[in-house]
Length: 310
Ligand code: SF4
Image 1 (cartoon, helix red, strand yellow):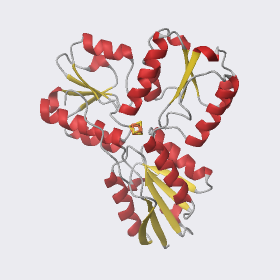
Image 2 (cartoon, helix red, strand yellow; image 1 turned 90 degrees about the vertical axis):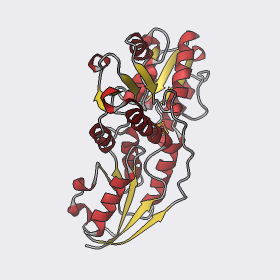
Image 3 (cartoon, protein in one colour; image 1 turned 180 degrees about the vertical axis):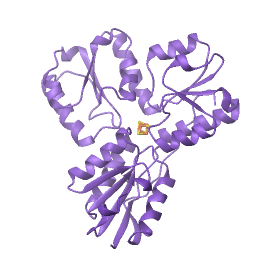
């Protein structure tokens, strides 16, 4: 078995994820690990959560589990107004690590509720970010409609002149374009972003996968199964006609995948640490890789400032 390995230059952690992780790290240093509690996985990556838990941070799924007097961190995906209010009522020291891109969408939903507009959220129902976005609508939540596909849009009943739309930040850009097109076709007066609310990190990583797919027979994506943007990278590769696998780390690789393959592409979701990519590359070097190169433009980003309270 021999093949080349090609890494997408633009891959892995985005500014929102780096900021959320740095927030937990700073909080541990500032307040001591025994006081730091994080509501939900701070980002959707098994290794990141395990690393921070090993340093003492506590991860919980509900506020009832958080002791009085704690420092409470909201994850990068954001939370509802009710959760914010309950955290204040309980007197926690709250640090909000919601990604600024998501927080911008929250403000739009909040305002729509205040103005009595209906809201259409394009996204995966039940995903933490979508739950937070719905929860930021200030008013009767029955006026918020979650859709994903054009067929979902066909079932909507609303007055487009009195509605806005927003999207999850980590969707497939191509698939979302179809849903937005149907939405604007059915409700020409609906207000919303020119295209969608997918963030630059999502768009850039999907573009990089398309480029990678042109020169590989197989693509391995580093990322966890519950990571929306990582799953979308796998789908983008597959829709470009390339076999693709999503793995938490090298231990999930199966040697049979690489039989008869001449070029293996590697990328990583926006929440996956670079050491996971390095582990995959090391494994492949020991199992048939004859060269390792990178393609695509350079990965330059500006860090988001840390949240208030850190
Ligand atoms: S993927 Fe986009 S929205 Fe999500 S944390 Fe990263 S920058 Fe923010």
